[in-house]
Image (tube, rainbow, N blue to C red; front, side, top):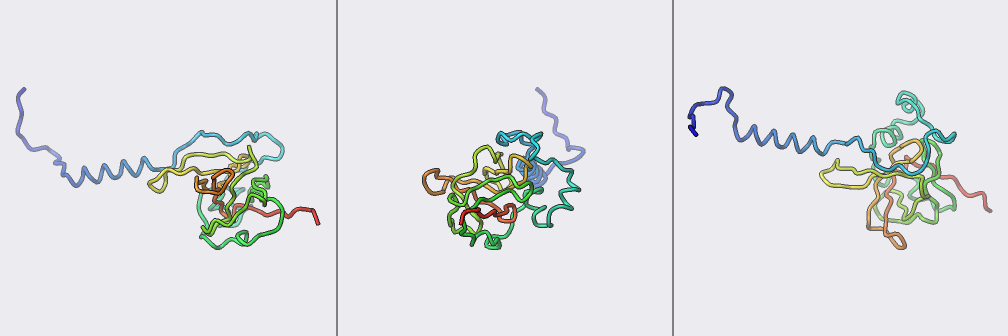
Length: 177
């Protein structure tokens, strides 16, 4: 094999190769179009809603829209639900589907409402790799509204911590007196 020693027409520096590698890595961390489980709720169910983004934008506050539809995060310690102690349930702010019961809420010290269990089949999960780490993100199974992330550092009996954006929830107090 004959090696030709000639200059490239477009020279490539180590720096440009490094920058290209960084760009490829960043693009691989971009939100994926995941088809993972979203619970057993059927979008055709009369209680589930499937709206165009323009309708969501007019229906929700800017912060609710950012969290529920764009997978944003509210600042820790800003939700009034952190202080909620009454008996009741926590519903999705987008479609009112029940997601959590008050008896599963606990003080995690994170600044967000936290729960150790969910109303089963009412949430779905997908993998989130946005912050250079892999986390499990969960959404309402009915309207697909982003709620938060689940971690494996919660209390017994599940060992899970559903760390929820308060703005993504509406508290409904129990009718018991």
